[in-house]
Length: 403
Image (spheres, rainbow, N blue to C red):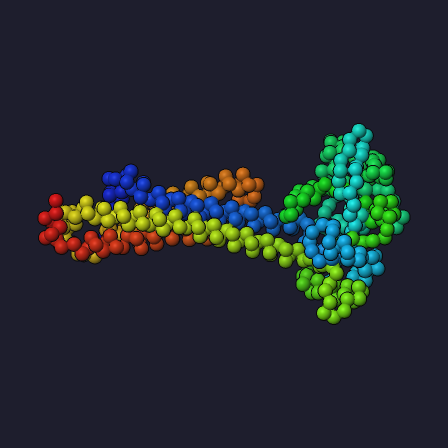
């Protein structure tokens, strides 16, 4: 019986192809819009997670001041860190895999007739470990170079490309402002961070070199800490905060003049935001499904009116009211399901094109695909029931009289 109902539904759809196509258009658009929006949202979430992962795994960043911005305001007013703070964290906080002091400056990098304005990072040989960065060529700083503040540097991929093009810079000498510096290594490319910054646009030099030759002080601007695998970054963060409050003589209840940022928390905040936006966009797009359902109900009511005599004939020759109900209900569900299938294919195709255009990964969310199809079929049941019920309740005698 059910199979016969499906065959009858397909026959009616083929009989009015244009009308059926226009009827399911709302379902097609709704399903396609939901899948496209969710695919873009999931791709953006994956991209944010990957970008933040590039900064380093299990990474804690310790800044002076309260806030994540650049120089100025409370950050500039807060006292800087010192190498004693770095050593205290390394010695007294458990669960640390590596720690790297860091200070930044900017300078004109010059080689031959080419120059490039870039960021200079003064740090230690642990910087690469903390940031999960590897060398494309050359070597890291030696202990003697770090102690003496030698004029040596590691180049980011962007700086290498702008100054040296295809030439191997290892062993060559360049200038950072007035400082002459020998290139000892080139970093692998990391691309943009989750904050839109080109991570490869930098030059890394020993911290003591930056302090003596460029900054003229012994300040440490930030401390980068990598927690060991399996160790809670929340515990390490809390221990660092307690130690620095003690070292910086902050009274109980007083505000911190530093900030310890756990990148896992940053990633979680970003992904939560994108998921909320994705859900909101998906919900807005789902309104089209309801509109499509109204279209199905409208056309099924028209179909009942057109086929009143057919319904009366079936009832007169012995068909039960439930048979007529099933026939029209199945027809509505088949229409909605066809719209759902077409919408899924269209949504996946549009999502693939959109993610490529936005340069984010294509993430196939099988759950939302199945949910969209199930929802479209449910729309067919809900909005097809009233017309089917109306057809089933027709009086056979009155139906046969209908012209």
